[in-house]
Image (cartoon, rainbow, N blue to C red; front, side):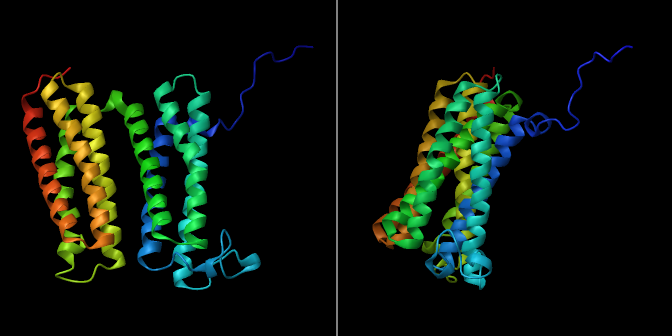
Amino acid sequence: MSTDSHTSRPVLRPLIERFGFPHLIATTLVVVAATILLGIAAKATGSGLACEANWPQCDAGPFNLFPANLPSFYEWFHRFVAMFAGFAIIGSAIASVRLPNVDRRVAALVVAGMLLTPVQVALGRETVTQYTMDILSLHFWTAVLIFVLFTVATVLVWAPQLTATHVTTALSFGAIMLPFHVALSPLVIGDITTYSPSMQMAQYGVTLGLLGSAIVAAMVGRRRFDSTRLTALLSAATALAVAVIFLGRRAVMTFNPALDSLYVAVAALLFVAFVASIALVRNAPSR
C-alpha cells in the first residue's frame, strides 16, 4: 500500500505572505494618519471629554461600550480606529522582526513606533481623565512622531520602486499643499469664516501631506541624485516643514501675532525651498 509522500500546504497562506510586507506597512501608515485626523476631529468638536469622561468605556450600551450621542460618537470612533492602528503597528513590528528580507533599519523604526504606542495610549487616556494643554500637545506630537517613523520606514521599504519622478511629484505636492496650510490657518481663514472643525481637519490633513511629501522628497532625492547641493536643500526643506507645522500649531493655540509672522516667514522660505529643489532636480545627475 503506497502513501502520498508530498508535503501538503495549508489552503490559506499567512496574511503577510499573501498581502506582502510593503503593503502591510503602507496600510499601517494610512491607518495611523486616519487616527490622527480623527483625534483632531474629536478635539475640534469638543468631544474629547464626551463618553462622560470614561476611558476606555463610553456612555451607552452594554457595559457602556458604545456612544450615546454625536459628540460621544466622535470620541468613540477615534478610539475604535486607534485600536486597529495599534494592532496594525504591532503586526508590522512583529513581521519586520521575523521576516528575513526586511531591512534592519525598517525593523528598528517600526519597533520604535510599537514601543511608543502604549505611551500614546496612556496619553490618550490622560486627555480624557485630566485634559490639560500640555498632555494634549504631548498626545499630538507623539502621534506625529509615530507617523514620521512609519513614513520613513515605508519609504525605505518602497525605495527600489521610487524614482526621480517621485521626487518631483513629492516636491510639487508639497508646494501645492503649503499655501493651503496657510490659507486654512486661523490667521487667514479667521478673516473669512470661523476656524470650524472641518477647517481644522482639513488643515491637519494638509499638515500630514506636507510633512510626508518633504520626507519622501528628501529620502528618495538622496538615493537617486548625485548632488550635494540638492541633498542639502531637500534636508533643509524637511526641517522647514517641521518648523512650519510646529509654528502653525503654536499660532493656533496661542494667537500670538509674533508667532503668526514667524509662521508666515518660515512657510515662505519652505515654498522657495520646494520650488528651488524642483528646479535643481531637472538638472541634477541621477544614479
